[in-house]
Image (tube, rainbow, N blue to C red):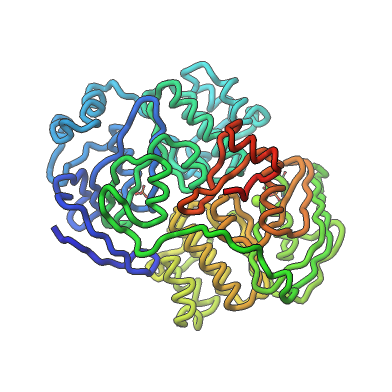
Length: 540
Ligand code: ADP
Ligand code: ADP
Ligand code: MG
């Protein structure tokens, strides 16, 4: 064995992985010479939600292809038979599973990662799509649970990202299968919707089905899973599935960068969520006093009232609230993209804006695109250390922008936004399509650039862990989604999180070991206690 291997992790830092001994025996699939290698597999258990936590490019989809019978693993040789796979997994929990798979006794269903691609593959009305999927006769029930009743007669092409996501999840739930795989079910959903689909997926397991899920929102993964596997390795080169772990331990070990049972350190530093002292920025220099704004769209169907407020130099303000409440509309008005119906944004501030949905019509490489924005910064050690290396951008320089994956494009768009000179940075849902390490790298980069360059950022975000990690203060949006919204002035984290979570009736506690936010189960002792005290967030 190689003992200790040192390689560059995609975010610039050196990652030390001491590979477990006898790894070769556990080699499951190799795509080719010098191609990606997968070691070990997750367990599949009836009646359980098994969560998978790990970076993109470490073989999660490959594992699912194997478990759903689409790919016979070559066992890192020239194997082409399920019988050999069954032999190899003798004594393992998967042996019986592979026997059933070989005999055609396992019917798998997969909810794909990129729901945006569905309208290209499927035409027609939502109701018809779901009817075709409905093998269990539960269309009405599932439509109600996922709040799809109002869009059943819409054409699939007209759906927003969050609607497409829920339709895709519903279509998977309606199938009558043995093994269900949900690949990133929370993308595009707000926190209330995320918890709702998490409950629905749990119910599926409670009815005896085997469920596997990949999820990068740690609060949701935590809420949904019975056990988890951490996947580690080198994205694009190899991936190793850990032993199954209890959900809490697995997530904590992941944040620490150290797997105890395996005795493997896969990241040289820990990620911790120490309570930030309530921000002192209110004592600092005011960047701008922004005015109250109103936006009514021409069709008169939606009205946003945003109260004015002040922003401080050096701070990061999180923007939170349900989907369809006007967050993007607000940010667009500040960016000068959308004109307010009442009030005026007439400041001399320069603004840099990353939209929620990123267009890809640029012809050229990543390097071309970024060097047009600021070639000098690409060469500067400061930006290499603070932004480019942590986000894994140099590895993408030679790639064509219009051929990037969703997560790669997101990282390039965030980088482009942060490279521009501006007083105020507006980023709308930067975590979409990013894995946990990337979310944390982005959060860190934003915080440190704002502090060191004395700039200000507003970030629209649904991932509670990221909001917690990023924000000094919060702007909370309330109202009735799709009808009217109200933006409150910026407030401190404690008040802001309390207000935001009280609106949706969810409480969070902090994990005593890592300080990460964990959603309480509804009606649990902690949930009731915290609600009584009005402390939806900060109690330990
Ligand atoms: P994840 O789901 O964790 O993002 P995947 O299983 O999709 O990871 O991919 C892991 C690695 O295997 C990636 O580097 C990917 O490019 C590579 N890969 C996937 N499919 C193939 C294939 N058919 N041939 C060669 N390499 C592949
Ligand atoms: P959020 O970002 O909070 O999800 P948005 O600001 O995107 O919310 O949208 C708020 C509401 O305004 C939604 O009901 C949306 O359909 C509607 N809306 C957004 N843009 C337009 C537009 N250009 N014309 C008409 N309605 C719009
Ligand atoms: Mg939005």
